[in-house]
Image (cartoon, rainbow over all chains, first blue to last red; front, side, top):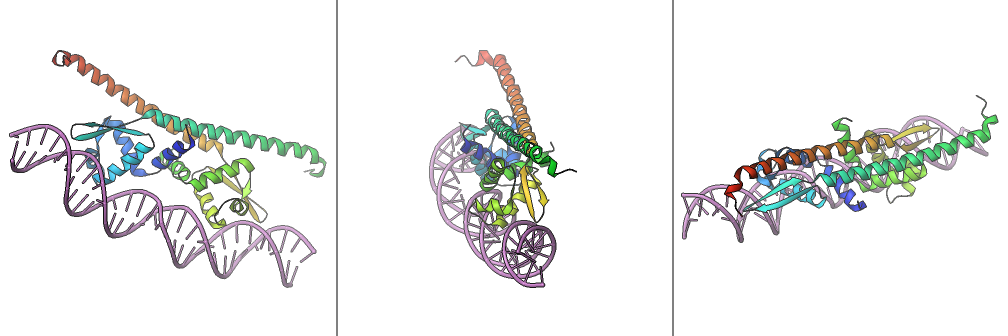
Length: 116
Length: 116
DNA sequence: ATGACGTGCAATCCTGGGGTTGCAGGAACG
DNA sequence: CGTTCCTGCAACCCCAGGATTGCACGTCAT
């Protein structure tokens, strides 16, 4: 996953209302902006904007059916983002392990100077 | 990981400057707010605020040494957050699979009514 | 064709939070 | 002791973006 797309996912998931939208879509499988707005304390327009952000992040996709647009979640993208974060975590761990090792070798070199 | 903490992690990671701070901390292992500010186009105060947010999310921890405070990353928390997202993704997949199965059984039931 | 319903676009409002400045308080060092 | 350096607190500025309203356009039903 490209770094910019991971960023988009993080930004998208940072909004409480958007997370709620994802929850709703996960339960319903598929829903339009209007019906989703009915379950939230916000306007349809707000929902539309949020869905656009989620779409940019690849977390949601919409298909036009007749006069309405139905949206559904895209689990693969979320899974990719999770993998990206996991990789980042392991990279950090490697760094910290290296630093710890370095510190210990330094202690060995100086150990007669730090008796207690 | 509690839902609210996952939320905190997502909010924390949504800011570009905060992600940069995490990168810097990962390379340096440990650094103070002042030195970090030297590597970024922002003030020390801004860095301090960001570090506070990262600390609330559990992504960073600071220890006082003498007159300065040194911060380092906490990979476990990021790994936890990644796991949380991954679980969410699999939950969505299960939902979608169930809905797809339902749709196919409905098709079976109606197949003589949709000849092509 | 007429009405009802759903979407799309544009202008607008307003709060949250990222960023800054200024100053006070402690810790190191001469 | 005074000086220097780093942290901590508080007030303030500013704008991205979350939310609303109003209207025009396309689609289905009667």
